[in-house]
Image 1: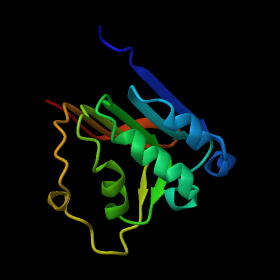
Image 2: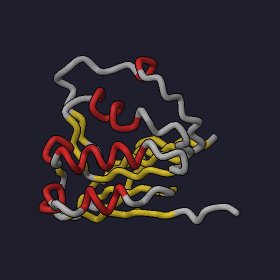
Image 3: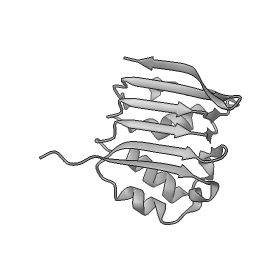
Image 4: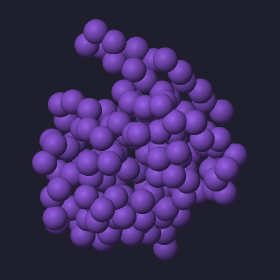
Length: 141
């Protein structure tokens, strides 16, 4: 009998990156199929998240049941940090990056450097311009 899939959507105010119970809740979702991390009001740096939360999210993104990820209004210090977060998502079919900030002060990472090769069917990279969504890149295979 197929197992029911689960979705988690975290619409996060700034304090949630330090919330001590959230990593435990995320780690209990072993059949996760869709994961959304959306900062509620403004950008927040991934580096601001507690280590326990980062570990729980990375583990959730590596679940074989996970097919869809949406990250919104999150900043990364470089592309290597973003690629490392997504590297274990081998079952990923849909990836949406919306209003993501990446500092390009360091040498950009090459995607070929990571071993996971997800078979992504849909990719959307969106940027908010003047209060409305304006797609800057979209692909569907």
